[in-house]
Length: 132
Image 1: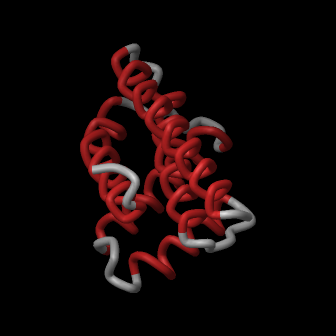
Image 2 (image 1 turned 180 degrees about the horizontal axis):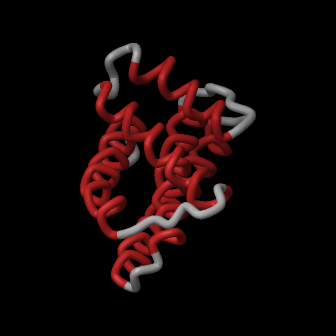
């Protein structure tokens, strides 16, 4: 992949991240909590995948993205441990919400995550260096 191609993919993933993040608030306000949990995870996923691509780090699955983020950014101190925990939490909530029977997300599950997810994405963007 050329540097130009890499940059274009990173920018595209960040655009998807921001579009998805905008939908998180809309879905939350509409009390569509399962959908909100899904979109919250994907906003984080797009940002994480952009950071990995920027750094030429391969991940072959969603859980692989979490593993690579932990290995290369949390354990190396580039992201705080709390943000690593947040990434795993939104991954788990999305898995439960999408696939487990009788799991219903509600306002109390998601409201405390809205601001930290936005902060996590901003921190990831600062590591990418394309914004801010």
